Image 1: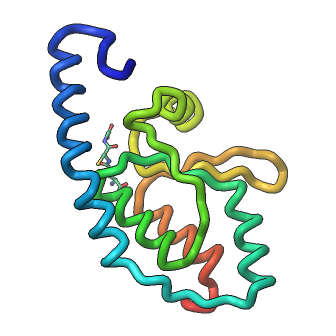
Image 2: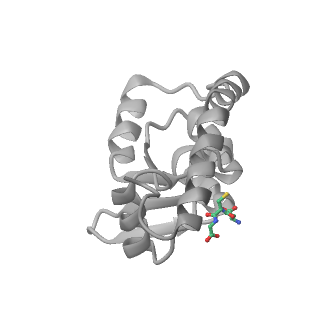
Length: 140
Ligand SMILES: N[C@@H](CCC(=O)N[C@@H](CS)C(=O)NCC(=O)O)C(=O)O
């Protein structure tokens, strides 16, 4: 019951956010899909390896945050099926981000390294650089 805990002021602002979010959602959805093309073409085996690697990644984000949209567009362009987690509306994802990364700031990419270490990478530009270095080396 997101937004029902706390003062009435908290509830009002969270309620207003939800209304804005719901109104903007279809616009963002269309803009994201129309404005982003998949430019990367890979051999099926290479794509399969990349899809396996993406299982170790998760993007914590807000649906209508412009910095998150920038990262999601790059994920689409690079054809990366990274799980997207809503840290605005889903209290479990919000808590995981706060506990793991140290603060509720988005976007944040959770990376599970081969040795099991977990890294929480903040800053949209840093996330995009990381994704390009790891998955688009030939484009650099
Ligand atoms: N420089 C950051 C800006 C990210 C940012 O300001 N995100 C906002 C949402 S649009 C946020 O998480 N604000 C909460 C906070 O800063 O604590 C980036 O490029 O990722």
